[in-house]
Image (cartoon, rainbow, N blue to C red; front, side):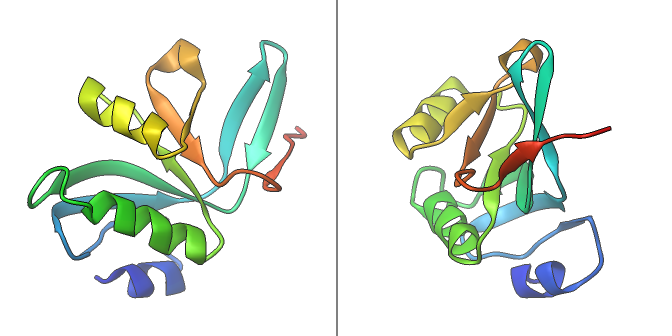
Amino acid sequence: MTLDEFLNSKLKNSYVDYPGFDALYLRRGDIGVQNMPEFLLRCSPTVHVASVTATTPYSGAFTRLVEDLIGRGFAVYVECVRDMKFAESLLRMGFAQINRNSGLHFLKNHEGKLSPWLA
């Protein structure tokens, strides 16, 4: 499935074919951003990068994917980063580290996409 097919479908998650990746698993949906211990914000619309394996790491494929998603109006959420070099590159790309109490998670292009998460 291509990125266009995924984004135009009703699927909430899928492996997606995208240039420069051997494997790319995306999710789509709102995420919670903990602003303070007692305050939760909703970020929408968001595409979550859940798992990624670049064909050639650090060759620019991830940057192109992020720019593509942002160009389509999405915030981009990268969850559960385990590679510190990748985490550092996300910060250089302008990602903000969020929800620090549950791991290394990063968000970009969230400006204007945050609202109170009402129960």
